[in-house]
Length: 327
Image (cartoon, rainbow, N blue to C red; front, side, top):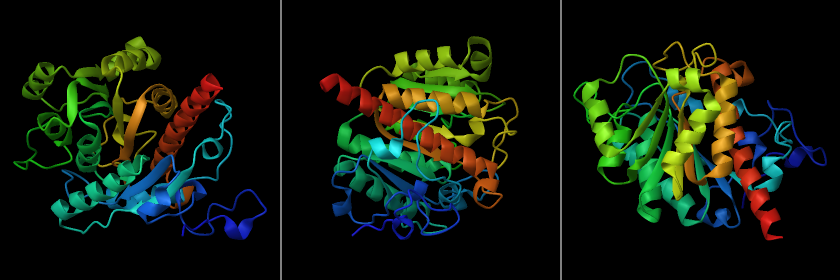
């Protein structure tokens, strides 16, 4: 059985954000693969931060992002309610263990695999950025090499960080090296700051990775950058990953490696919705949120929740257009 967090409030259409079972947007709670039949999107939590190189705390983010979510309703710009167009469930958290990143990655991979095997799109709430490796690898194991659109201050293509090969600064290198992600279908957006160095960028050029820096977003505008990123990933399954530190710290102060001079939340939210409405989305995640407040008072968790909400809206628009075209 699934649990409907809104059940006790019916026939009202929603409930207060602070009451009832905690799930993303009040979505039904499911824990068994059998409950994924007929589902379009499953929200999954990956509460681990054992592989960070600076401030920890992202293990608390999946719960904080859920707590910051609001009830379903129509998107006032897009004119569609994602929760009405799509069947969304909250599939709970992967059974991670503190201080055992290998176990936690395996648990995340298994849970994502269950979702993909059911024909459902997994959207993961991290967690540090290392969780993208087990998530994307689980998708690629079932669908073959995937494209990647990656919003981030950093490339996360290091061979190692502080001498450690598995880190939140190395998942994209590992995904490309294993063949899970096709470098020629990988686009990075929002890069800035002082890391990585020439060696990492040389490797990226060899792999055919497209890098769009914050000065590109500033000079070209987010719409042009998104068009170029979409052209680079082309057709086929795409994984979308959003590190909240792509945002300027004014919009997302609660993150482990903040870098001034970043994107605005307006640009990021539009970009995520636009991408989700136009690609064959295989899976997605939002990562590196360190909660600092309660519920929607936590502005970083709130913007991360809206990233997921815009992604769902983009998927809903794509679904609606496909249904109209086939009518």
